[in-house]
Length: 251
Image (tube, rainbow, N blue to C red; front, side, top):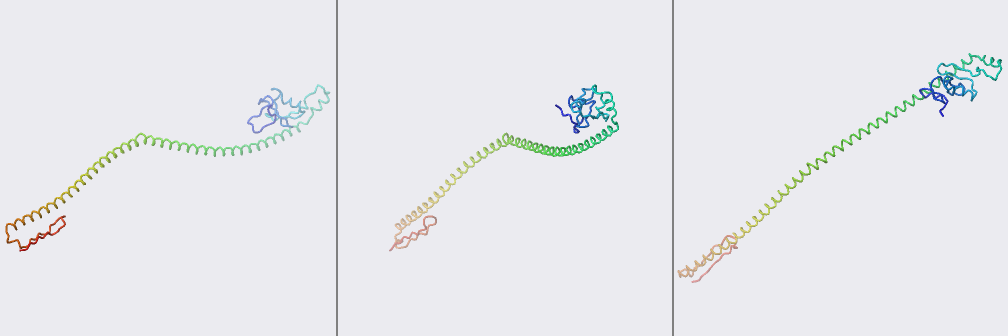
């Protein structure tokens, strides 16, 4: 069941029983809201249940005293006495209640305005945080796309290019290695030739010395006068050791 008490926070009041928003009456005793007799007469039902005599029509601010209603059980004199209730007093009560109601509404308005300002501030902060998070997400997505593109370029272009360049370098290294080995062989061959040339030169000098020796012996045989002389062989240059060979003879 709906609450029958006036709620200032609502934009529009309604009957607490049937929910209509027209021809509403509020009980000046407890604040219950009910519809009038042109609707479902729930305001009068409230009076019957509680015996609260005074009600205020919200639209016209008119005060109603249920004591003025004729009772079929009472005598005419009692009905006349109830009809003589001081209307000025009722109007004063209505004015006072209207003032209290207006004050309460103003207080409620200030309260809800402060609440609304607080909620608006919190909403603004949350909106800023959401915007910041969205910016961070956008930046991360951009970085992700950038890295994805770079990775794609690495896989599709740079890595194959590096592999190809590596193969070219490896082929060049193979050629340089072959050439180096060949040059090393040639150098070794030249060194061997140099050693052979040195040996040949040494042998040639030895042969020359022997030929000179044999030639000298032949001359001695042919010329006996030289038999008592000395034959000196000059020192040989080269790697033959430079030993002087001397032959002596006596007459």
